Length: 255
Ligand SMILES: Cc1cc2nc3c(=O)[nH]c(=O)nc-3n(C[C@H](O)[C@H](O)[C@H](O)COP(=O)(O)O)c2cc1C
Image (tube, rainbow, N blue to C red; front, side):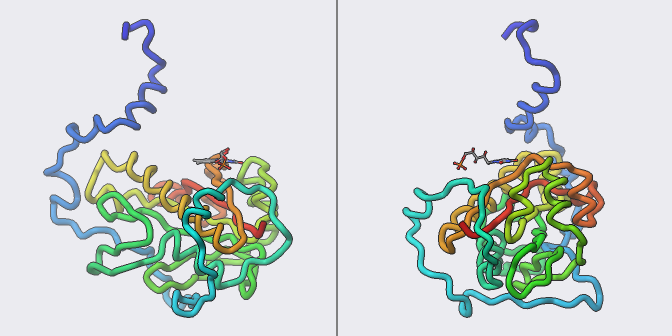
């Protein structure tokens, strides 16, 4: 390609991000892992004294069997929801399907229901509960190690804030719950340094696709949202926007 026909630098940078050209440029002897540093925790700590709300487990919930072929064929983005609550067991199932722990390998690594580059699992899941049976409306954080929810705080006018934070996407405020995924890049940087960012973005796709498919099993629907106001969402979650920041959202409701 001639110099003149090259895309602007901003696009070159974006396209570079999608390639794997960064890998040979990383100093693999200087990653936190190579330097012998401890990996970041697989789950953000639970504040002392905070109450954990245990969720129904796989052995306890009554999720109907679902034909995988039908679920894949039927998956679509839903932006219209019935005015019907999600049950707590449905919410538990969706959280398990997106970030649930299958096996604990050791303190610093768990296998989950979704894949993740280097098993780093760089996300925390927040649930903005609007209409979930058994949950006071408000903001919660999923604790995959405990399969429990942590009540973060009550949020006045939560539905309105969610719509504002998604550039006016009204269906976010009309859902039963909005799943919000925040990335903690240090978890992946510990192993992959500058080669982390593409794989973090790839990892996010896996958990949202699992959410779409799991929704098919419970008569619910979802729609991925990547268009949101960064500062508003991070403020809503109470996260710093540097070490932890919102990357993806998905409102869920009955269809
Ligand atoms: C990464 C990603 C970001 C998306 N962001 C939005 C969004 O902000 N708002 C929206 O209404 N739909 C969003 N969508 C949904 C797409 O518009 C939708 O997947 C596409 O139109 C195809 O429709 P389908 O999912 O029903 O097959 C997003 C989908 C993906 C995968």
